[in-house]
Length: 160
Length: 290
Image (tube, rainbow over all chains, first blue to last red; front, side, top):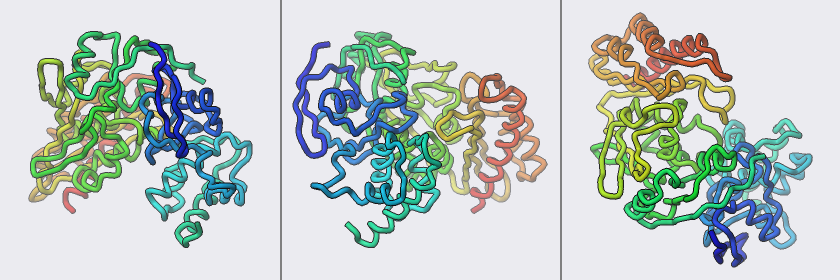
């Protein structure tokens, strides 16, 4: 099928580009738009590295046909920082040593954002459940869960 | 890593009828796309090759959970996550809530639809087991006809349903629970992201300390999800004392026809049917009495 001109809204910016219908969202982000914070790993919905938010909802961009995401608000890791200021979730991951190689981090952080948007006061078990779809092969998850619990508390206390 | 998708023609109808007409034209060369967690993954693995993909995601009015006196309904685009988070499902259809809660990852549940899960027709479907226990019906629409069938008539084998290539499941309908009804869902699984070794869903109605209605469904122990009807009969009319519950659990073992695969042996699955049915009946009973 021929290429079609399609409009994408990524991190508040609009892009109009030609794509073919068999392209997945992660391919459009990385290969067409050069927005490479979103990672592609398993390509089967198992690892969560390609997690993005589409209209605020969690989505695996490796299993999302790009056509189905057009005209919707796509949030990737690049869209979290405001100006030069990192998002509180990003800061917490750094402060708690919740990053080693960093490959899973964009997906982890977006899954964390989806969790905290839905439930600002999660307990440890709820954090673990919310991140169960994001695999990290470096750490033991403890520091990641610590970071999420800490930033949840910070946000509840009104820290930006 | 799986491979990039091969090219296909893409359709995005805006009504069910239009979707059915496109499916009718291309038949087995086309498939419906909803959440995509199964379809796109299988296409990337080259387990399925399609010339046409028919997305139903732009058809309005398909993502809902509605309840009234007659029961509960949800649509073709209702995600497993929406079902899990629905207060009414949690309160009145606990079996379904528990099944949805125990599935896969948040991402998969936020994308994947319950109807899509049914249409994949895996014998390990937790959603299907829960819906068997709740006595669900499926509304199916084709280009020129419509039918509503009990979920037990939907599955015919591993990955096989009665759905014709041009038909679409548009709604799942659950009858409202009788007073003093309780349900429970249990499964055994290696990790949350894997499919069940065995699952059991039970729904009981208990009045005057007597079991009036019992539905027991088992997953991953036959080519489709099955009802353990002999076990149900053993419970009905009884006062559900431990001896009767144990007898029903043993009957369920005889009704299961499991295979051995990388997840479990036949013997283990049979043993676990007994344990899960007993636990699910006990929990359902506690809830029915509450």
